[in-house]
Image (cartoon, rainbow, N blue to C red; front, side):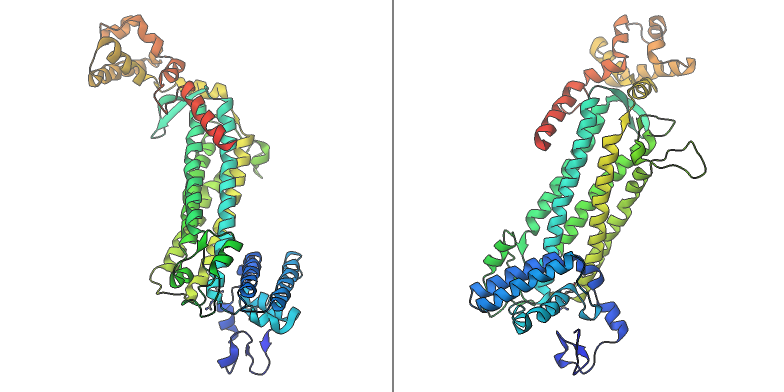
Length: 466
Ligand code: ARG
């Protein structure tokens, strides 16, 4: 079936060849092992193309009907795992077409009228990336919903906020969760933007120059759910920006997931105990019976490497390529397939981990008070009540922190008399700002950590995410 028996060369393009390819040539050239993942999109594209060829009178309705029925059979064969893929037929496009010929005979040869594998693969791949873009958006929103639930449960729980991973100021658990909801919101936005740009149909660009057949590109674009046909046939077959944009959006998302993972690894340690991960999303050690390891978080933390690697690989493939199609571009698929699989799995694992985890309110609150986290509140009080310039207030507060540190106590444990040795005008009222709860409740500026502000953020996202 696969080879033209008379010449031993490829049945699809072997007319001018005296011999078939060397086994090594076939091995480096064939993409069927991976591009079989485009089967559904390839058949969809062919179905739209055949219908258009019939509607424009380029092929007969009878041939189009035979093609449609044959493609349906092939899709069923592929989906049930019965389809025999052949490396000799190089790629998904030729595997499908060769099977179509077996099923319906000569009419199959008319399907490729006014079409090339160049516009075919560009179309198939766009359709595939578009589906994955939708899946990525859905996956991101699922993680956002899990974070939102955590935020709702602990909107006003106090925890330490860090800069340089040193205790900085108290914040609320809800605020911290919502920071990731914002980040992921931008990620979903990037995928949406990319989707809008990628939604142009390359089909009909043919090999590179368009075609002399009276095709209807609007019709195929519409049938495949594209907004419009791509406007320049050279660009249409050469463009892989949609894949690069997908990878870039995926890499930024993966970077965000990696940061959240790092926090979960730290927070679930015995030293922090901020969160307890569920057994469902943890693993044990084969030697240390007490261990419960945050492997999912560690793996997600690492997955960015593969996704960013895919982005760099495809950039490197595309740079310096002259117009229009070059076979280099066949190297686009494995990278994008792997990155998409990796991203979707990471999102699913993150969703499960966040949904299942328990934040330990007591540990969070106990840690919030440590490390002189309300020193800024004290400095602000000196500015507000005593009228000190902020820089002087900073200095006075620094002296009080040093005093507390030397005595091994918190700021709130210093006596008023002790404080007055540093600045005589300090009054009893200062103690009201030294508590962590007062601290977070006072930070009511827009976007701030005050529970009232956090609840606003939560409400806004609840409305958006449902
Ligand atoms: N398998 C090829 C790819 O993925 C399809 C396009 C081949 N086009 C060609 N002119 N050889 O890029």
